[in-house]
Length: 489
Ligand code: BG6
Picture 1 (cartoon, rainbow, N blue to C red):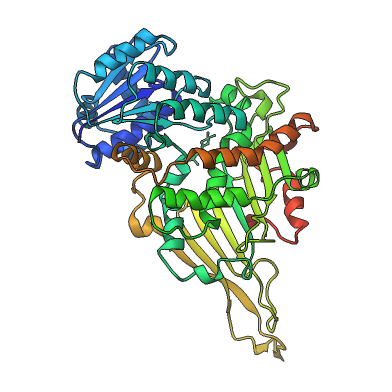
Picture 2 (picture 1 turned 180 degrees about the vertical axis):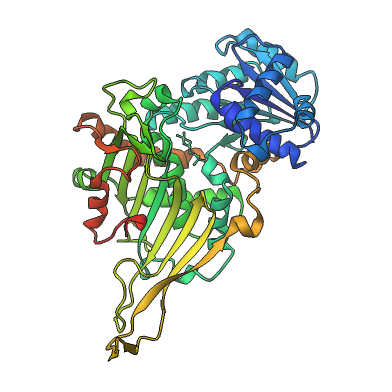
C-alpha cells in the first residue's frame, strides 16, 4: 500500500526526537508499507541529501539498540525527501501538490507538528491547494489550542475542509503499550469488572511524574504549563480509560462515545473546589540524581518572573452510577523525585477487622505505565506463624503486605512497538481507535478552563524543590480525604 507522509515541522524537535525514530522502527520491524515517501517540510534551505544527513546526525541521540546502523539508515533514507516551504505562501502549497501529484499514492498523511498557532493556516492552505481529497489524512499534534475557544476554532476550520474520519488528533499516551494493556485488562477479562465500581473502590490515583525539567522547550513550555501540556490531554485520557463503561465493540466511535461520557460526567468546578481541590506548583533549584539543577525560572527561554505551573495535583469525581463519590486524583509534574507514571486503584478495606493490619491502602491494583509496564496486585498474607512470639501467646494474627507482580516487559519483551510507531502505522492504515475526537477534546478543554481562569488571578504557583514530590499542599489535599499518594505511604 503506497503512502506519502508529509511532515510539517520536519526539522523540529518532535520530528527528530520521536517521529523519525518511530518511522525507522516501523521500517526495521517491516511494518511500514514499502512503497512510501516521507517528506520533511520546513523553512530551511536543504536538499534531500542534506535533510537525510541532518536526520542521520540526530539519530545519534537515539538510545542504543534503536539506533540504525549506517547500512540500515541508507535503506531507510531512500524514503526521505525534503521540501522547503513558507507555510504562509499558497505557492509553496502548490509546489507540495506538484510533488504529491507526481504519483498516485493510496494515502497521503499530513502530519502537522508545527507551532500550534499555525495549525489553522496549514489546514486551510492544504485545502486551498486541493490537497484535502478522500485519500488525505491529517494528524494534529497536541496541544490543540490553548483554551476551549481556540480549540473550537481549530476544529471548526478543520471540519470545514475535512471529514472527521480524516482527522487524527494524536495523544501519544493512547499509543503506549501499557495503556493498551489497561484497555485489555479491563475489557478482555471479566475478573475485575464486578468490583470496578464505587461499592468496592475507595479512590483512584493517576500519577504522571517526570524527573526531567523543561529541557530545551522552555519558551514553548512557559506559554503552556502542566495543565495544558499534560492534564487536558494525557491525564484525562488515562482517567477515561480507567473509568469508562465497556464499549459495545472495539470500533473507534464506540470507544470515543464512552470516553466522552466520562468527560461530561466530571464534576464541574466551583469556587470552593477550585480552592480546595487544585494545587499547582513550580520547581525551584534542587537535586536530580545527585546533581544540582536550576529552578524553572532560570531555565533557558523561561520568563524570570514566570507564573507558569510545572506541577498540578487535582481531585475530582465522576458523577454517574458507577463512580459517584469516589475521588479521582490526578498528579503530574516536571522535576519530580522520579520518572514514574501509574494508576493506583485503591479498594475499600474489609468491612470488619479480625486481623491487625498495617495502616494504609491494603488492597490495591497498580497499573504501571512507565518506566515499568505491568500490574501489581497488593494484598495481605499471613507472613509467619505468630502463635508463639517471645514465648507469649499472640492475641491477634499479624498480616504482612505481599503483591502479585506481572511484568509485561519481561513477558512480552521490552522492545515492543512504541507509542508513536503504533500511532503512525494506525494513521497510514486509517485506524482511528487511538485518536481523539473533536467533541472529547472540547469537553476536556471545557473542564480545565475554570482552572486556567482561576489561576490567572490567584497568588501564583507554590514553589517545590526539584527532585521532590511537589508542593506539600498536594499531600495535604489528598490527606483531607484520609488518603495519601501511593509512594508516600
Ligand atoms: C508530551 C509533553 O506530550 O509528553 C512533554 O509535551 C512530556 O512535556 C511528554 O515530557 C511526556 O511523554 P512521555 O512519553 O515521555 O511520558
